[in-house]
Length: 334
Image (tube, rainbow, N blue to C red; front, side, top):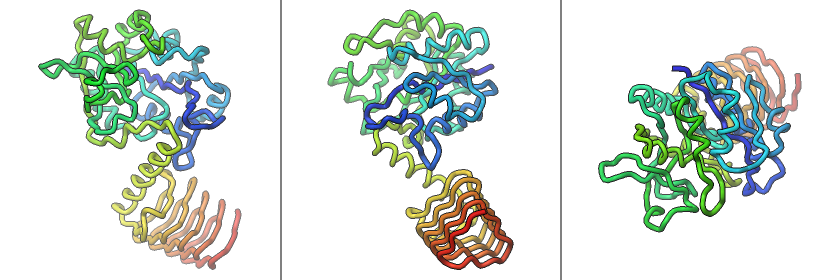
């Protein structure tokens, strides 16, 4: 099964209150879009198609990995956005996976669960949902009495009864490609916003007698969509927590994980101790049995085994040999 990836990155992100395109706001010092591109590389051999719109040139310039860009010149909804990828992808893949660039926490493991279920069941549509008390503006999945998915209703269009549903659409989908492309042209504009909703495809597949399958995530945090600065801070906290937990499980001591800031790509050897307030960025590599003092800031630094980095050290692009003591307050640059 060949899977093509479509990443939706055209929106302005009005609620971010920013001139910067929403997908370029950073989580752990990386644009949100970078996480979506990493995900695409992990689950597909094809370069993703990125749908751009607001400040498209800025978004394109931020991408450092292979990708195909398609511009949505009019913001007419998510269904219309995916339609723009048809010329680039039709006939090139059996399955089309679609997700948003403002969801930086989705894991490859979850996406592979969706892909596997889609393939094993022969579904036309396979979607990701989450059970949550706080709907955060997500659409609701409506099921029939037998528990089968029937359709998705967007929150703005939902009745009071539908708004009480706890199963939320997480906006990650696998579609049968041969069905998807003509189906997109059958979507009708929504009653209130007059937009073409991608979510309508679920109900359309059911009406066509097609199989719709659902994967429910068991880690609700991963479907956090970033629409405000408060959401951005939540995503930052999750990414930082994942990295800190990974390091502690590998034998690194973090005196206070909640006040330690380590970018996902940083490497730290076992039996190293990191004190509160430390910030480790970029391609930093810390050897075994080191001590990183309080409020040290290390960017693209290599620290040999047994080193002691004093409190408040600021170092960029440096290479410290084994067993070196760096005095507190040192400011160093390679």
